[in-house]
Image 1 (cartoon, rainbow, N blue to C red):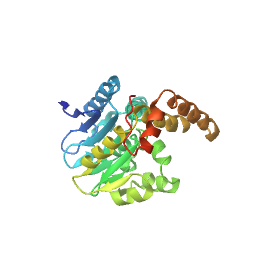
Image 2: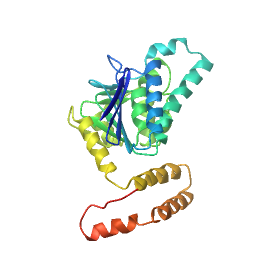
Image 3: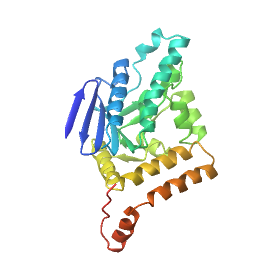
Image 4: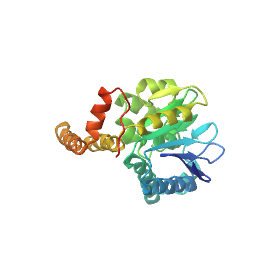
Length: 260
């Protein structure tokens, strides 16, 4: 296990799973230093070829309570737009990683915290977690991709209500509307995220990357064009002997051993 912890963001590697931990007490707010720390950790993760999954979580009892709102005081139209783009680019780095990403939401995830979670492929929430977009109470809107990712995830009526009103919801409600994959007992969210990551890592690495590519590229295309991408990727996966090994293992009732 390699550990590279430098507050306010820590990066730990367990086998082929990277774990980024936001550690900016008392509530893990997204300060400029924290955002830059996340950005740097993501650059490290992207530079390594052995990683097969990423988990993002928060230290203590909070995932990320939101933006350090003192930042907003000195922004004008130009600097506000630039700051938003900076945050969006960091979130997009998460979304663009070629392997699966999991948010282990331990406690509060508001504003930028919810946006950070939405940038991941999957979200597991502590039963005590609270999620939402309270930015309107400061007179602004979610600026790190929240209006775009959330509206592609849950029914629009719910999106409008939550962002218009700044409504904060429980983990159970987030599960009901499809904002999180599942709700887990308190203090077990990172453990459950690790189990999920380990299960995914046990599958064919090249196949997992192809699945993410098919879904992400397909979302930018029509269904018909997306299916062309799907077929191309399936064809590439059929090259070599790996599929033969998968079929053979199935009939022999044993786990497959893939070499790629």
